[in-house]
Image (cartoon, rainbow, N blue to C red; front, side, top):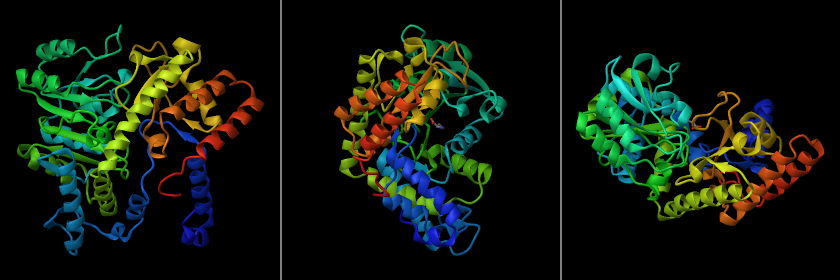
Length: 416
Ligand code: DSN
């Protein structure tokens, strides 16, 4: 651990931080939305830039002393523009849901109709869940995956869009393993004059790394978190066409947020700089190769992968359907041996969200640590061994040690 001041000044917090760092080193991280950031990103988040208030935008702030902070924010904006070929970027959103709230506020009025991917099929809370601001304030028309293929049928999306005529079409997901047909979404929206909004939070790094198609050049607005495959700090950003720049900026500040987090914006600039390097393309390509290898290895052990495979960094495993193990049981058992995944609904899940049929598994974090395709077979073997011995405490202790020995072969960037 490299926080000597915390160790002397506040041993109680230090002890907790040390245990979490150890957990991250000794475990296999397969949560699809998590990653390990670089030392440079970590340092920026712990820097004196956290001391500043800077409500407003570069050159137009409500506080004095922002001439240097302006440079940090502008640098992050310029790098993001280059990375995604964007006309306008707002790097201030504090996280994914506030970013999405700002997009709704910037483009719509309460009550307007929005077409969004249903949460229980792989969408996100902020895409229209009844308990979320999106479902409470807007009229959400869901689209679904097909029961047979577990893939979205774009002809059906078009049918719903032509019938319902939403004011905005939201394309994006948090648990879907197939590529999104951004161009078709745009073509459908054009037929009815709807705004196009893509939420690329999960795949932003795969897009920046040139492995998946980029919707930014032709969608009206695109939001993303910055801490998933993009491997930056906790946060988000919004990219849009110049014509929506003013509406989006006003919606972020003063619409949804006050002062931006300048230390995080510095970390975003660093992460975008890292993603602009040629080696990030190799990283993004390896994430997908690893996800495919892991899906194949799990299939080889009799686990059913939803839709039969993956085009990105994640997969949904139908554990209940293939092994009569619930997602909740699996999450608990795997956590016990140091493998982190999350329980997840599968499309048309007969079970409930807190104890669904599936788990979601992703490869961004293990790929950052240097795992390759051949290592995915070991990961699948360890997962299977734990799940098959989930009632045998002694066996699980043995497997936990195997997980640790495997994980320690791969250094954690940022701490080692
Ligand atoms: N919580 C994120 C995820 O895990 O997909 C989405 O916000």
